[in-house]
Length: 163
Length: 374
Image (tube, rainbow over all chains, first blue to last red; front, side, top):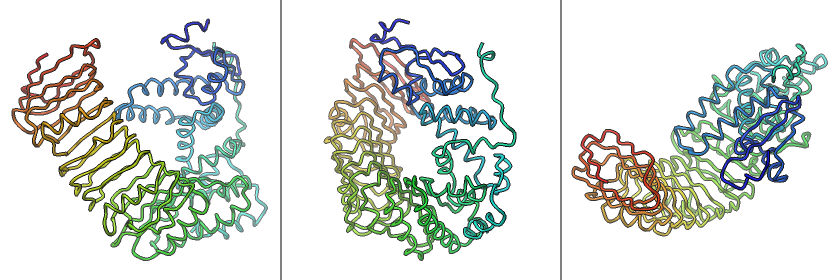
């Protein structure tokens, strides 16, 4: 727990505490993949315990799993590793259900994990791309709350997009 | 332990979670979509009605759902209406920012005035990134001068357009310029020089398949990364880029001379398809005191005895040396990785009498008759 060893080359460990009290011990290089944590480390310097009241342990764990993968491979970034990472990312988002996707996205956004936000938002976009309005409503459980005739009006105004 | 403490997340079945995402995240999601898809989302519900006015990226591509089975003329009309609508809508959206404009359309020789109007719209709205691919049916689209005068642009990607030398170029914040299959009108070298001279912050330049570029002279003190690929007409290349860190040249037809000596900061150098003889390679390496990674591939036309001496070099790749009886002397005390690939008999002499012992990997691939002497 002491921070005396931080000056040496050994990697410093950070404790991240999620909203439900679950803690994770991670290397600084892994946690600082997240912009928010990077800022905290730079500001507070010596603090080893970081509380994250907006992220639940389950999703923090998943975010850190992603960070670990991408921090490790950053050390020798050649094209081969890029490919490996892409595959890993694809698998990572492949079977996420909407609930998990939503909470992961909220967590990644809160923690300023820019690359992870890109990955997750692109995943959501892929669920929308080229879909009909009715299909999108069904996929994302969106209920129309327009007054009668209002939707027609908007469709008419942008008729070029619906033909 | 984790399982016990995690509270149960109950999702009310009739509430779409995506409506609970903050607006900036929704805008981010929509910026990956074709703009016409984003427009169609405006009828989902009241919440979504004006969402697309604030999406920072506008994308148009012939494969968009909305453009299927439409003629080029119809597609142009749709894009025009869409941009008009966006312009009107921007007044309602307080958080409307415009950062990226990607336009991939067929160009049949007409439509110049529309294209110019849209580009002006993007420039006037301070777009930061411009990605333009007007696929020519016959003639290339001549880019209007207005594009080259912007204080907001940081990235320009152009594919198959025509550029003129007489542009007045003022892109003070442009960092990345990517030119693919560009047709240069008039003196092609001057067009490029003129362009670069108006970009004082340029860090990354990519030239790909720019046929007609004979003797390009690239002079930039901000440039850090340069890639020239498949510009088969290049005969000599002159680089004056004091801060260049990475240079890669790749061509199927060999380029005669590359002048690099003014680029002392180069760390990564990759030469594929360059005419090199023993002395030019040796001198090149000696002139780059910070060189860390060197790849020489299909560049051996005059090589007989390769001499590479560098204190800084860490990674060396020699590939496809066609000449028979090429030998190499490599004096690189800090080398950690060496890769040789070829099918001729080659003799490699290595010396490593330094405090940093040579470890790491030697990958010898296909080298049938390679003799290794240490």
